[in-house]
Image: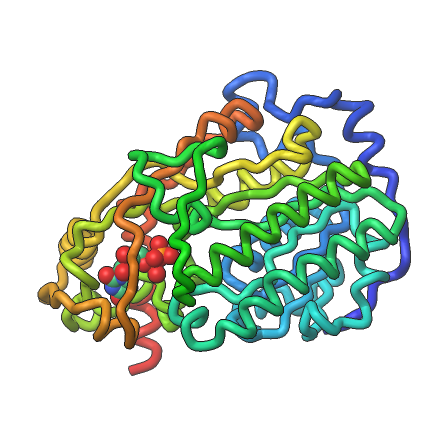
Length: 369
Ligand code: UDP
């Protein structure tokens, strides 16, 4: 795969506003299901971390829409397998590089109409293993991207990925963008991820305000779907793999903690709409699904849908993470802002996502056998 695209500054964004006006919400409900009625074709899309789970789904969506896609990824948690199907597509380029040192960054940013900055060290286990890398990649990497956008003198649409982790121990039932951030003051490394992402948010707002950049900060709630791997502690791929092998599902703690899972194929629709939404620029927006489930019920549901003989095995956080661990007890997004801005509604129900993942895991297990 090549690593160079020609230099080009695009004028698509001008046409987006002239043609569709400043609003991004489709005019009627039926338009929501039409692939991006506000989209202009042949957009130049740069995705940092584009070989990762969400990044590769963004790449797929934009390639399918006829856009050109440039992915940069250091393959630390992303993988070539995630972008394998794009090889040979002339609209796709890949650079294997670290966002901290990539010499092609300025050129790629000057080329891009839209940038999704997804490159980050993610996953609680990974964060506990290598907190130094988390701080460097997640903060310095983001600052480097923002500085390049500003120095480029061009104003692309930008998505900066943040996380629902920033809400920390907030005790409200569900979290809205205006709610308080509640993080413990004693320095447990477990919170390094949230703190770096919060720093990214403030970096993004500072650049957006000072230089008038078109940046949307998205707080991603738990995202699930094809290509997500369980090695870094993600619960759904871990449980699905255990269920299809009839192994015990490892529930951490008592399993009363809750999460709200959004299918990545919905997530990328929301990100695409937000990026092209002038009213969202300079804003922070929750992205996810507001259906909440406890981890114990999730485990039972996966066993049931997989017709698995697996049992549940309850494991202490200390055994699971190798140290005392402060888990978030519940996590559900308030999606009013996202809905008002984009008309977004998730299409994938959790059962459908799980059935799809179970089927894919079965095929993979059979192939490996
Ligand atoms: N979890 C679990 N078993 C696993 C992996 C995770 O019980 O094998 C729990 C974890 O403690 C957390 C929830 O599932 O309460 C979601 O974990 P994940 O790492 O997927 O996301 P996050 O903690 O970032 O929400």
